[in-house]
Image (cartoon, rainbow, N blue to C red; front, side, top):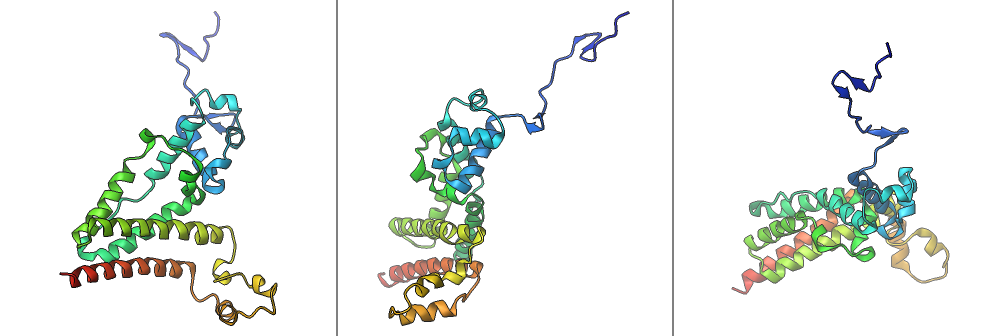
Length: 245
């Protein structure tokens, strides 16, 4: 009597299940491809991530990618959504607005720091409107709502929101990114010492004094000062509004 195949049963042939791995690699999915795009963009920037680079990173062919997505734009859109989904939900309390701003800025910094060069997506790519993650709208609305509640005008609230974005984006890209690559960022404040060494006869006494005193603080302390500057801005706006009444 012929031996029954392992892939069959008395009820008929078994349905073959897709293995979670293939030749030691995870099975491709849209989410896996998009996460790989985000990982690469976080280190290199979206513009540098070609379909060839993405395929090589995943250990597949370019043709294999097109079995799951229509084009590169679809991957960029989905990667952008994945990035936005990691942005923290604001924990905002108008009664403790200073702490709320500092805490939210710190949470944003941690999220951005995982994919620093992906922050340049608006310069590198054109994200289609349907791909905009709703959290980008609801989180912004929550921050504006708290700022309006504590007494800022519509214009002032937008100024503070823009200021927060610039401070956190700039710090992550100019300080954290280089620090995480191993550069002695705080030792190079306000300029790298070798810049001064290249111009020994240049009369810049204050700059030499500042470089000789570095580092004055840690990276985290520098970020705290950056956020404190924003809090001072809000205090000044509230004081001006109070004096104008």
